[in-house]
Length: 186
Image 1 (tube, rainbow, N blue to C red):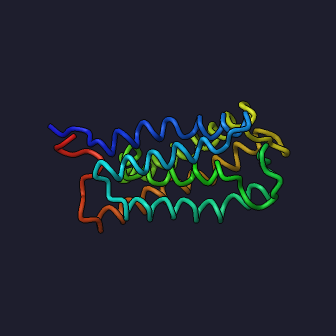
Image 2: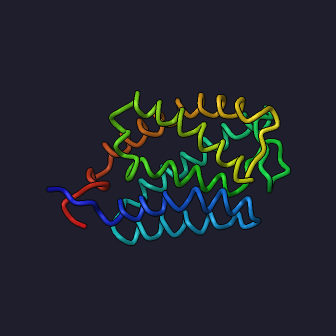
């Protein structure tokens, strides 16, 4: 029987801590919390045997997608972050979310790698609900209305999640460690 690896467990816990640290931290004047969680998660994963080169590549992919998509939402007036005055560049805590989310496709979100339809549904529903909660908790505002924001976010996230899942599957197939998420050792 396969057991969960230590990097998988660290990612699972870190991923669950990252979103509240980012959103609540931003809403309460401590946006750096997201970076502390992300860095701690990545360092601990690396120290316990994760493929840090591969993981770093996926984090950078998350940053790249952040750089491409956040200006669409910000510049289009769909969202405004409470701790940012930029109309085109997302605040740092958003970048941390993108990095932590993307690397999780090797670990706690690995189950989506072979399920593109489920990944699209997960992204569409999860993206819309996530941004709604972020607005409700005070980390962002929706100048064009929350429903509009949820629909735009959900629509794009329905493509983003399968994209990250496919990229992770591709990178996983090229990695010398094919079983980082669930393995025989803890």
